[in-house]
Image (spheres, rainbow, N blue to C red):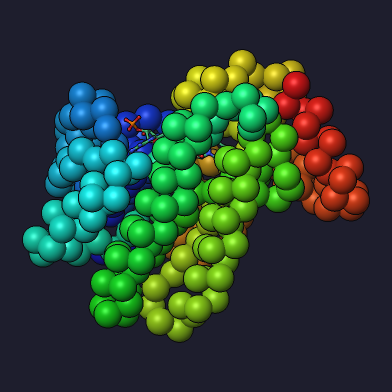
Length: 258
Ligand SMILES: NC(=O)c1ccc[n+]([C@@H]2O[C@H](COP(=O)([O-])OP(=O)(O)OC[C@H]3O[C@@H](n4cnc5c(N)ncnc54)[C@H](OP(=O)(O)O)[C@@H]3O)[C@@H](O)[C@H]2O)c1
């Protein structure tokens, strides 16, 4: 990484987003932090500046709103701050049987997890392609690999993220723009609390710390790895489930969530 480069981190107010800020700050990359909770972003900004001496800008945005997504582009590239690293990390899940969940929450989730991620990739990807240089990380989930009862819409959204990212990775080969998808398993962030789920026995057993997961993501982004699952246990789960018929994979996934 060269100095004076800028990264845009979505979902920088908690969880993986905070780790990305430290990992990139340590490497001397300037940061644009975005999320809705500005107090948290201010705290992170002060910490990162004092630890690593990089420049940090905050752009508050609600990614369920299309105009806020465009604002991120206008207030960075539009003002001469070229983004070399786009980390499409913001996202959340809605836990529960689909028909029992609240539509407004699901709609917002799809706006953030799919629409905002796609729109950001489009506008910043275009700018990167013109410069023949840039790296994009999309944060998916191991939920992308099979249907996810109790997270039906969330798991389907993450399957979109994985397929979209892997396709772009191939389309952009040789263009100077690298795209990678990170598919984490359950990780100790605010995810489960926001989703409204108490961790199951399986989730407690499988839970990883967030920093090593974020490190795998940054490494994949720099290498342009099409997609990656962090952690030995998560890898085993994915590979062993591939050996089962899909209907059995779905039942097992359902069982592990209860
Ligand atoms: N932790 C896990 O077990 C796990 C597993 C697989 C995948 N993931 C994925 O990892 C990514 C990061 O999640 P996390 O685990 O770090 O959870 P987290 O601690 O809850 O962080 C989620 C981040 O997304 C932001 N966000 C949510 N809704 C937003 C909105 N409408 N507008 C703007 N920002 C919004 C939140 O910021 P504000 O609330 O301040 O806006 C927060 O910074 C997500 O894409 C998630 O699906 C997590």
